[in-house]
Image 1: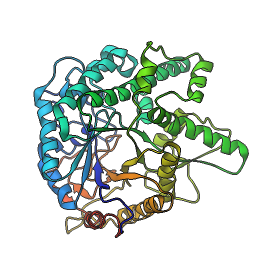
Image 2: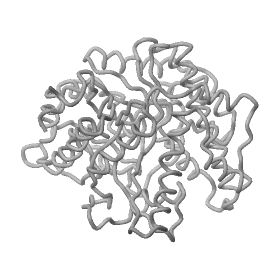
Image 3: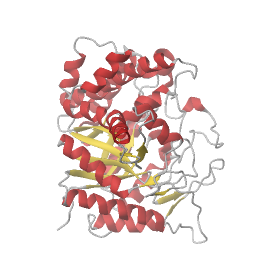
Image 4: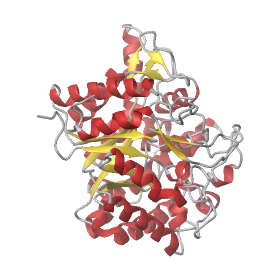
Length: 457
C-alpha cells in the first residue's frame, strides 16, 4: 500500500512572466516585469518559453509524464490591463483554454492569482500594494476569475510565497528610502496583502463554494549556527518572522502577538479600517501551501528578522558545512524538507501542499538531444524519501508534491541558464533559437515515480 493517499497530486508549478511570453499580445497590459527591460544576463521577459503559443504542446508533455496537477499563475494585467478597470475578454479566454486543456488531459488546475507581477498602472498610480486602491483592484480581478472559471478550478493560491512577496514589493521603493519609512511601508504592504488573501477565501465562498483556498509561504528552516543559546534564540526569531507569522494569519485568521508587538514598538502599525480584523478572522485558509529550496543557519549577533532572512536567501546564502550546495550556493537539504512539512502540519493541523521544490543547474543538450541529469534524479529521490517519512512516521497530511519549473523557464532573476526542468527548452539568455522541447533523463524517472504514486523512487 502506498504511503501517499490515492488522490495525492503530482505535477509542477510555473509563473506567468517566467513561462508565458506574449508580453504585448491578446490585450495584455504592462506589468512591473515588462518595465524592467533587459537584465544583466542580456535577457528580458518578452518571450520567456512562449507557453502562450505552445501551451497545448507543453500540457501534452506533462500529461505523458502522468501529471495530476499543474499550478500556474495568472497575469493580473492580462485580465485587467490597468489592474482595476475594464476586463480583457481575450486574456480570460486564454486562461480558460489552458484550464480546459488541462482538464481534458486529466490534470487538476491549481490557480495562483498573484506571483509578483503587479500591473504597471497600479504600481505607478498607487505604489502597488502600498495603496488600498490596489487591494480593491485585486478583489475585482479575483471575483472576475472565480466567477468565470466556476467549477473548473478547485484550488486557488491567493499570493505566491506571501512572506517573500511582502519583501519583493519593497524592492520597488527608491533605494534612498529611509529605513524607518521602509519599515512603515512594509507593514502597510503586509496588511493589504493579508486582506487580499482573505478576499479570495470570501469570494470563493460566495461564487465557488466547492473550491479550496490555500495560503502559501516560502518556507526556509533556520538552524542555529552553534548550540550557543544566543544562536538558538536568533534562529527561532528568524524562523518566527519569516516562516511562521504569515502561516499564523492563514491558519488562525489573526495577527500573532509578536508581529503586533513589533509594529507597536516601532510605531508602524498599519492603518486599519474597522472591519479589517473581522474580515481576516472569517477567512481562515483550507490548506497551507509552501515552496521549499534550502535551509539557512543563523548566529546570535546577526539581524534575525524576515528581511535579513530574505536578503540572505537571494544574495548570499550562508554555507552549512554539513550540506552540499548547488552552483548558485543554495544548500541541498532533504531532511530540511521533512522538517518543513512536519513543522507546518504539527503547528496548524491543516493539510500541507508542496507547491515548489527543485534544483537549478546550468545544462546543455548532448549529441542525443537529451541531458543525463542524474543529479536531479538524486535530488528528488532524496527529498521524496524524506517526504514519505514525514507521512509514514510523522503523520503529516500531504495533499501533493509539485516541482518548480517542470519545464525549463526563466529564473526569478530572468536567467535561462539556471534550469529546473524535466524538459529542456532550446534557448539561452540571449538567443531564442527555436524554443524546441526535449526530454531529459529525469523525465522518464519522474514518470515512473508518479505512476507508482511514489512507491518507486
